[in-house]
Image 1 (cartoon, rainbow, N blue to C red):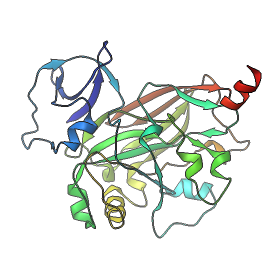
Image 2 (image 1 turned 120 degrees about the vertical axis):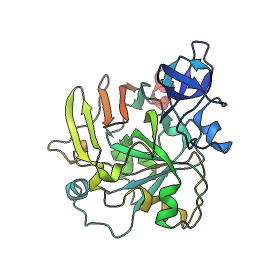
Image 3 (image 1 turned 60 degrees about the vertical axis):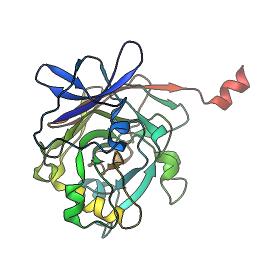
Length: 281
């Protein structure tokens, strides 16, 4: 099943499920609201409701937690010069960092912005100190994300947080595909393109820590709830690791695609930082 949040011309939004002829409305304004209400995928796999049309927007606009795993593909670990991790390397984002599948990524001209195509896991129900099996059963589904990272800020300290949680820089979507329809451990091709040039390609089957293992591990120290989002890490091919380094520039078109889920298409816009704009006004 494919789930989404749609936006009408009026600006209002609705949670929706794919139907043979399009989309049917679900009883909430977004998937975040729907999952917090306790909704779960019907065992029949069929959703009834009025048909609706609209633009695909950020499917989960208000997750309570956005937790990310770094260094989770072998090629990426190698290009950063690190050893294979024995435990997941985790950091957090906020809901403010998330944007939709076609929104602009707006950055300052003073940062070195890099791409990171990622599979994102959507939690379907509360998890606390869950086993791997319990975590697997609690996965609602999967979506596409790009953990656009400000490398200069990320490298200021040993903690990555300040380079990872910039407002309105992490595209997510375009839909959520439920776990009964796809299995990332079997291998989904994940790719990233900048201005049509492929910069990343790998398979989700090569993740060091897969989705169930990540959710189980995270739930050991913090409770995960329906609608939370877990980003699973990026493959090799980041701009920072290239010679010379390649960072995103104004007008670049960033495409992030995962087989069987969909594609994000986001244009990069570079603006003056507010501090400089105030000085020159």
